Structure formats: structure tokens, C-alpha cells
Amino acid sequence: MGTMLAACSPAAAPVPPPTVAAPPPVAPPAPSLTEHKVAVSVSGDPGTIFRVHGEVFGDTGGVDLPPAGTDSAAFTTTKSVSQLDLGVTVVGDNAACSITFDDQQIAAPVTAPDATAAVCSTRSA
Image 1: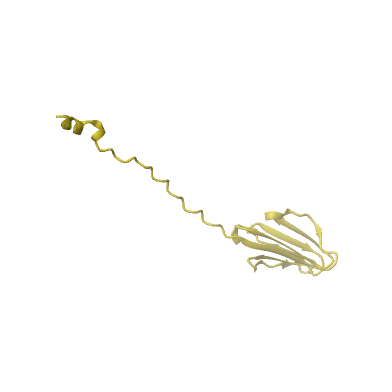
Image 2: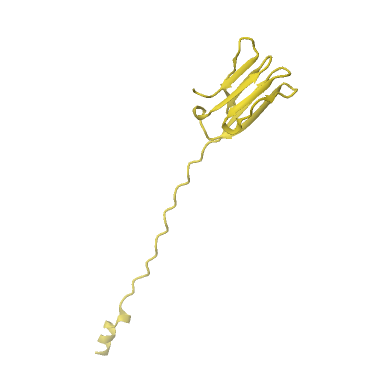
């Protein structure tokens, strides 16, 4: 009878293996945002003044064109062309400007009839 009691004792009962919690699911990486290069170029004769407004520039106010007759600046953005809000005004003889997006021109100058001012803009309004 001693063997019968030993078979019924709690120590002889099978012990289930400990439960291991499953690791939390790994979230997929966030989609990477594509960086685009936006460049602004201005040119004109000596005495030309330009102004850039919008995007990373805020409003530069009037800036004298360097003696070389050209100037440019670039930045990167994750915005699309249609989301850009950027404008350039160049005042002076032979004034010109350009805005490019990933090396493709997106804003050509609109020149005053007397060729003393040029405006480039990505603004839809």
C-alpha cells in the first residue's frame, strides 16, 4: 500500500513546463522619406538685388548680388514639388532666376518686359 500512496502523492504528479511569454511582435520599420534637393539660382548685372522667400529661407529681404553676378543656395526636403512654397525675385539688368528640384527646373523666370526684374515661384496662388 505504501507504493500506492507514493503514486498518489503530489510530488509524483507530472509538472507542466513553465510558460514562456512570446516576444512582442517587431514593428516594421517606418517607410523612409525620400530626400529631394532643391536649388535656387540667381544672376544679373552689377547692382542687381535679389530676395528669396519661403521654405528654409523665410524672407531674406533684399540681398546684393555678389560681384561675380551669380549666387545660389540649396537645401533638401521630403516635400513634393506641389508642396513647396518658394519664391525668388531678382531686380536689375539682365535679371534671371531658376528653381530646380532634383536637378530638374521647376520654376523658370517670368521676366519684366524691360528685362530689369525676374520672378521664379513654386507657389500655386
